[in-house]
Amino acid sequence: MALSKRLARVGRECVACGTCMKVCPRSAIRVVSGVIARVDGMLCVGCGRCAKVCPADVIGIVERGEEA
Amino acid sequence: MKKKWYDYLWIGELLYWVLGLCNILFAWLGMLFFTIPLLVALIGGSKAYCNRYCGRGQLLSLLGQKLSRNAPPPRFLRTRWFRYSFLAFFMVMFGLMLRSTYMVFAGAPLRQAVTLLWVFKLPWNWAQVDMVAPWIAQFAFGFYGVMLTSTVLGLVTMALFRPRSWCVYCPMGTMTQGVCMLKQKKEDGGCGGEGQKDCGAAAASRQ
Ligand code: SF4
Ligand code: SF4
Ligand code: SF4
Image (cartoon, rainbow over all chains, first blue to last red; front, side):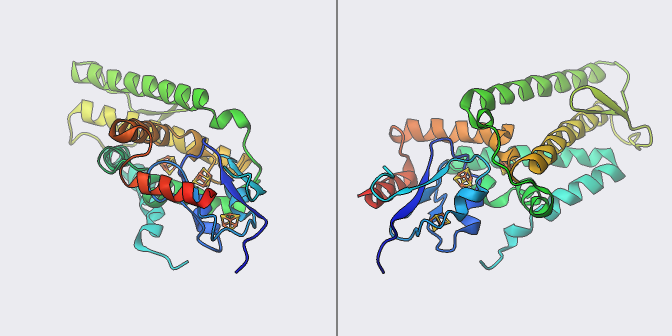
């Protein structure tokens, strides 16, 4: 499947609450371990659902290539 | 997503409140909500408690589905200085609560009240606490007050902002985050243990 143009990027102030994981339709964002959520760039479709629920408001939806 | 057993831990949180209302001594059970996340952070080096097992977080999510404005919280809430200042403030208040427990242990009279938001004293005279030493009861009153205060703040920010806004400045969350970060730094300079794999995965996904 072709990659989407945009994808989610998590800011450093993530508090690892896990709210984002519960709404992602692609299981692309997860707090795998440690203290910050991570986005799997191959899975994320940039739908922005995670950004809408993040209580810390640290998820941005950016153009692919700008997420680093 | 299929629900797992730990998705129902919010029931435990509700039960805690009910049991505490029936007998304040059940407030001691709240120590579990303090020790488990710290142990998970100290041993596991992660905030798995927050993103999986915290009944309070789950309860706020559930209530927030109906009651939250769903507005992004103000930026300052997530800043490090605010979160750590709030943690420090909370610890000072916790220390004062321990002090009054000690005073009762040393002979001061028991005060049958639960303090809400550090100022308001709710009379709690109906509590049956004769069966234990007065200091054990005093700690229960104090601890129930701490839990009640944080719940009220959690509910207010849940309603005003996003459901789990409390998790942004929750002292337990900040403390466990601090512990995990220190632990990871010690282990390998910022990307620790299993975290190292994640860091690798994150770097790969950026390429
Ligand atoms: S919802 Fe936001 S703060 Fe919570 S884990 Fe996801 S990115 Fe981090
Ligand atoms: S933008 Fe959509 S697909 Fe990407 S991580 Fe967020 S919820 Fe998942
Ligand atoms: S931040 Fe606090 S309330 Fe939120 S999940 Fe963690 S321990 Fe629970």
